Structure formats: structure tokens, C-alpha cells
Image 1 (cartoon, one colour):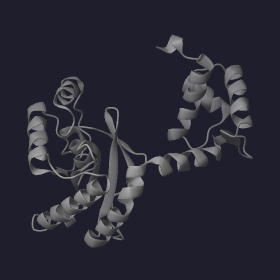
Image 2 (image 1 turned 30 degrees about the vertical axis):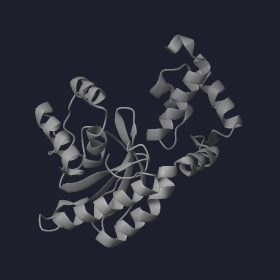
Image 3 (image 1 turned 180 degrees about the vertical axis):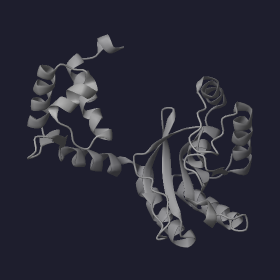
Image 4 (image 1 turned 90 degrees about the vertical axis):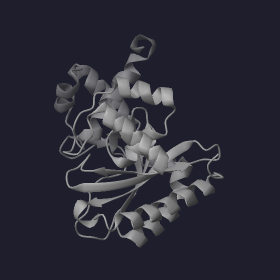
Length: 254
């Protein structure tokens, strides 16, 4: 609970979190966005700047300091799944000439930890660090599909199914059927669930304990994902996730 946490640390993190959505902010903008008194903001900003967490521009506005590059690189380097998956993802992207995304679970959301773009001029503009709800989109849903049954059902009972794209599934019974089908087939397909006029195909990546650790997807504009092409895309995707899973020690279905 909040009272058991250091209030200064909590407020400092609240301040830093502003820069996720705002690249640069003035002191007055920080005060307006947080509701924290200006004297407190000034004191915290001074401390954060002194530790290189924030840096001040010539116009007086602040941005995240370069120290975050070091932290970000450490996190990336320690995500073994990303390092192991990248060569296979590159090969898949080159074969299908579509964007390839690697996603892991982050609480009740999924987060993109790697993305390889296509060379096509018409493409999807997602980025590493993007989060999406577990119920929406193929890559998110493949993670939800393989969650432990009780945890999955609890999530389905509690989550509000809000439409994001015009194809987002907002009916719980239909979503349950999609999740069951994904487990049976080993893949799932989404149409315009996170962005309109897009298609995504996702499959699971397992570790040595046969536990799902990530989802991998091929995604792009709907116009390039016709029914005649889907079987080959699914085949290539499943071959890739199996290869990555074997690198992680997976020995096949038990």
C-alpha cells in the first residue's frame, strides 16, 4: 500500500512517468500534470537532474537523461528471449516481407519487446514498448490463450472489453471460443482489433518447461493478408516459433 512506500520515491517516479507520454516538459507543465506543489517539483527535479535522470535544455524544458539509455540497454541485454529470438525473427521477416513482433506479458497487458519492420512503403507503425490489453490483437490473445485456466477465467470476468479497432472482440463468449481455438490450432488471427484494416497472425513461444514465455506475430495491412496467402504465413510462423522454443529448451508438446 502507498503508506508503506517512501513518498519521495513515489512522487519522483510519478514525475518520471510523465516523460513516457511527454518528451519534454517545463516545471509549470509538471506541476499542472501532477498537482504536486511547485516547490516540491523544483526540489525533485533538482535532485533528478543531479543524478542525470533528467536533463535541462536551453529553453528551460526537461527531458529524460542519458542514464536511461544505459538502463534500457541493460534491460534489453538481459531479456534472453529477445536475444535468442532475433535471428529467427529476422529470417522470418525476410521470408514473408512483413513486420514481425515479439511480445511478452506485463501484468494484464502485453508489451512489445522487439519489432522488425517490413520494407514495404505501406506498413504498421508500432514500436518497442507499446502495450496492449491481453484480450485484443493476435499476439496479446495468444498469451491469454495459454494462461492457466483459473487465472484466465478470472481475467475474463474482471476485464472490461473495450473496442479499440472496429474488429475488437467485446463479447466474452466469443472471446472464450477464440481462446479455445487458439490453443487447439496453436495460432490465432486478428482482424482490425488494435488498428483498423490490419491483420495479425500470432503463435506461442515455449521454454524448457513447456510454459509460454512470449508470443510472435506477423502483422501488416489487410490488403496483403488475403485468404490465399494465410496458410503459408501460418506455416512459416509456426516453424519459427518452434525453432525459437527449441533454442529455449522446449522438447515439444507433452
